[in-house]
Image (tube, rainbow, N blue to C red; front, side, top):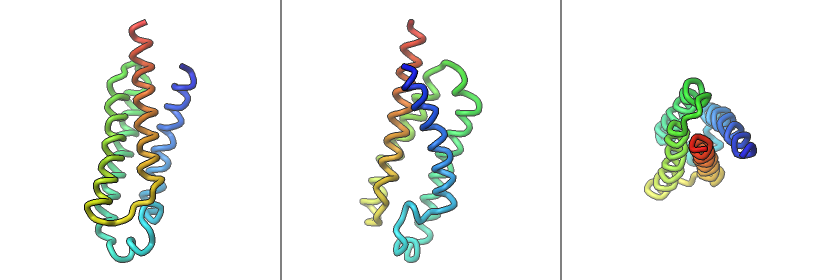
Length: 125
């Protein structure tokens, strides 16, 4: 159970730092050709990244220190929805998105869901 908690903390920090990195280096999400041809798409996508990072920071600042599982469950679900939305975005726009992004989003989501499960299990005894 300690490994789940450590992985959760690692995933939170990695998501915040990785999100900030992506905001300042969007070429890590889209290939260079896409960046040159569709710069406006990049901006709308980065708005979503900003919201995810902001919610993660807000929850980390105010809610993750409490033993409640619901904020962690919410954020885990949000990460998984973002992973699905990234795939949907890529298929609808026919713009390639680097594979590490949805894989990272799934990792963040599963890490948060595992922590929510751990917190729920600890609360029930």
